[in-house]
Length: 156
Image (cartoon, rainbow, N blue to C red; front, side, top):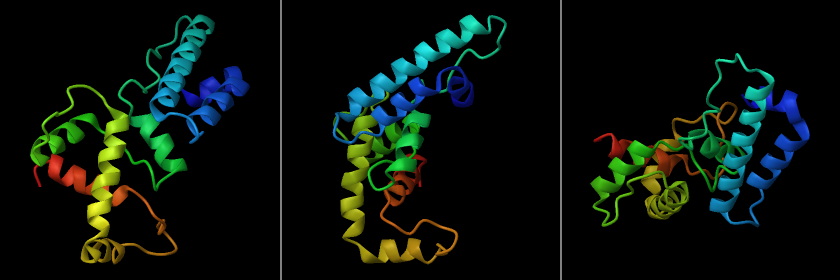
């Protein structure tokens, strides 16, 4: 759908991504504006293509928004799946397990997990030995924390 949105209104889509990637603004507000923009573009797309089978821009579950942010800022964001996050928070013994999508909290939890994981050099060394410098990103990333969260959330 992003390609269709681009064909329909490239300047608008560029502004939406510029805003989403603007780290000087509140994360939750940026995500909300991005989703609103996607909804508006989808409405316009449907108006131009009334017989389209496209009824969703795949952003309602926040997975794509998290992926966009993680692709741009891997040290601050990571892929997201609500049920995995919810289950991990249950296994962690959180007092307030999220009952609905809370992407901002997810990123905060991952950053906290990363702080603990970075204090255990053996964990990072174990992960690094699976990475190849010419094929994998070796910079700072929240993927280690995301992987740990997924492991815990899936009952690892």
